[in-house]
Image (cartoon, rainbow, N blue to C red; front, side):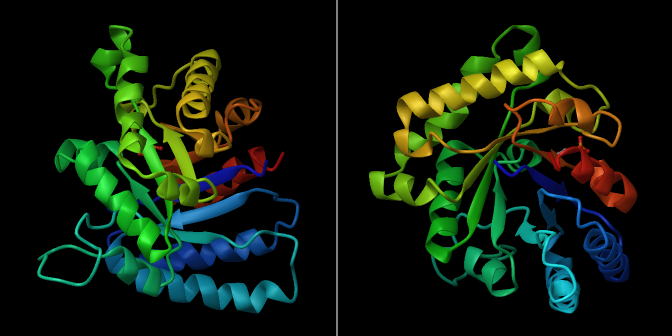
Length: 269
Ligand code: PGA
């Protein structure tokens, strides 16, 4: 299975010009690296989406003839409105269809920073998944336990509760999701902290997620399971050595092209 290396830019960088130059830097370096064989994705803020999409897709058409062997980077958004079944009076929200219209093909759903700062629960996240499916966006569902859960050995209970979201979807929706879903296991205590679980711990959790999906939601049995939380150019090789880690969701290190591409190199397995 081709590994995913996904850069979540969060609320970075400060200006549109910086977002465009980061995109150009990345696409130029990527086009020169035909040996890289993983699926790359970048996820800028909504305000930079249009400019990043233009830079990304212009560069892709330029490099297309010269180099077909590198997979073109894809584009995602960090969130979509739970009220985005149609346009409407929802101040401050952005819809799945608007993201798609600007060139995004993926959306994150349920990143821990959204759960923490915006009190997003399974009910809201379920609407977001439905809106994404309706608009034709693919979904990266983020799940993960807090430090307290981890210390009390409650990781599995937390993950089961977060994966319960799929109980609210119909069989038709689950079957649509089967080819359009990635699950990213991101322990909250590992995000932006420099602390990472051991490879054995991640393997055990990813294996657990896979079996839970297989047993309870047969349509989702082949869902790629990623890891996220303080992934960098130094530890990427260790994560890439495991067949149970189908890729990584990268925050801080995705803002430095050289580091991000070293991570992509590690996952070009
Ligand atoms: P980090 O963020 O790589 O900076 O820890 C990961 C994430 O939040 O997806």
